[in-house]
Length: 343
Image 1: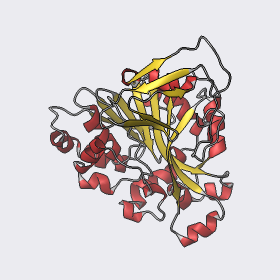
Image 2 (image 1 turned 135 degrees about the vertical axis):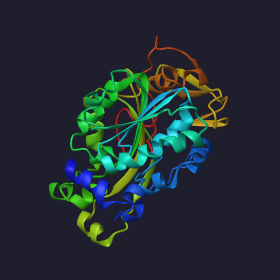
Image 3 (image 1 turned 30 degrees about the horizontal axis):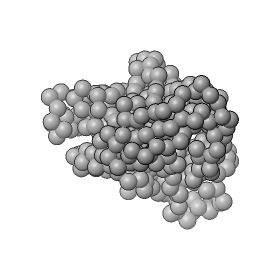
Image 4 (image 1 turned 90 degrees about the vertical axis):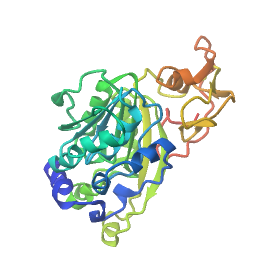
């Protein structure tokens, strides 16, 4: 399957116009001003060979080390390059030589466009299931991103284990991918076109939840959800009643509980994250209004107190008194989870 994917993205697809469905180009996410600016400065060849279903570029990246899994032609790597600045590092990993060749031949021009004296990007050819093989060390990465790639992996458990190995404590996984409302039948999962179009390897949302629990990630959050319409009559007939959705998900390398617990803690957003002066959305059910106290569960407290977001929030209360399970309302996401319950 890996060789089939290499051929699909290295030889068959020469631009996004060669895609047979809209699964890899269906993002409806609103881009922040800094991401828009960076994207406007990306060379056209890089953008023409881009295949993604979201915009997994989180806030507060300046000076950070960011790893893009399945970076392809490097679009998101270069956006991140602009955002991390000259003191940060943007690393791209991909297994397809043809895609990496596109990315690498634009290093000098992008460095010049961004006004940097020297490149702050590194591209590595390798497999996202084994980052150790290409020299990505334990606890070395601030943020891991990925854009519609993990679905292509035949060993997703290894991918997520590697992600949490390389992340620093408090580091973040922020990725977009294709999910399904049921398990993909074997004959569809093995279909070369469906797999290359990011549908055959789509994760069943409940299996993803179980996998995250298995590797020790007790709580993840959905930040964006977009239905995928496929837009190909022949492929729609093949997949039948399976529903596909593009989700953007964030998770942190933190010690969290497997359900939301109530400790009476309150979080106040200070309005100091660049481009987020009026509010900050942690996920699809946590919109922090600047200056407004918000009752939060213990897990949410950790996400804004024990990560790079800490200086932008004021927390009152601790975990000395437990009041039971947090009173949660249903999340608007398609991923149901005791931990992702909408607190």
